[in-house]
Amino acid sequence: MDIIEAYRILGASRSDNENTIKKKYKRLLFVHHPDAKRHRGEASDDGMITKVIEAYKVIRESLELETDSSDDWEWEAAVNGEAFCERAVYVQYRIYDDEDLPLSKVAEGKYIWDPDLEDFPFFAKSVLEAAKDVASGAEDALSGDVLMGIFHLMMQEYVLPADAARKIGEPVGSTEDTEEYQFIGYIKSSAKGADAFHEGEPVDIFLSDNRAVAQNPVTGVFLGDISFDDDALYYVILPLLEEPEVKISSQMMRLIKTGRNKNSIMLRIVLKIPQGLKDTPVSYKRQILDLLGM
Image (cartoon, rainbow, N blue to C red; front, side, top):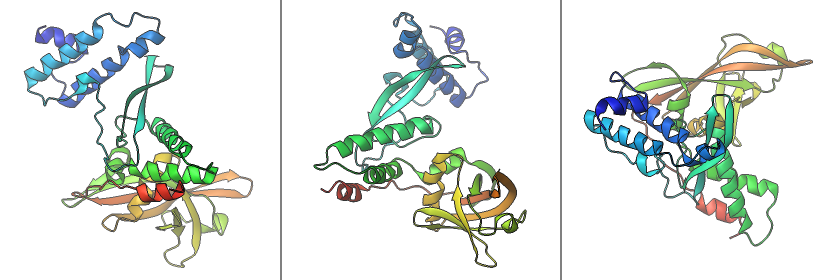
């Protein structure tokens, strides 16, 4: 296969960078994966996936791209070897942009969640399944609260908060020493309702009983718990509230009416993360075993 044919097969051009070429390659692997083809009622072996892999190799060698293991179907995310157990990794293939196929399991291991590779709902599903499997091995039946406790501990084992924040946050600034990312949060309830809202006013945020809470920095009045539209942020922002090197600031954006005599305050939350800050994978093996009664 020559280089012109390789670019044609991947739908790439010579102006594409390494990351763009790799994304196009990954997408074609999913499109021509036997699971996806079977759901479309197509023959699973038409040779196209072999051509895609060969085309990527030709282009990679041409551009002297770094060798990777994409063609052996290994998941590329980092691994937390200290995690309590392995989990499945799911992806969802598509026939057309508006037609989703059933989930397909593509890997199993102690893989860290990578927002660029794995949708958060699929990630949460895989961890919940792993937690249920772990709970089924307990000598006594576990309550729903204990199961959820195991689930939340395992979720934290598979998330690198600072790394995830850099990928899912909105970049709003950087210096030689720090980088800033913006997120949106909501004060679920307010002590004084609409009277507590003042556009642009700063809000202090801190962690209390595994909840993010808001406080008026001047009066010290507790404003309420903070919620997020994106469930992933509970596993990203909350751990970073405990990281002394990460600075957090927040201000009120607007008042949202959520019901009769009920309001929610939208917050702009900015995390200032040191450029060199790296996550350390955690292990909750002892805590999980305690919940299992072992």
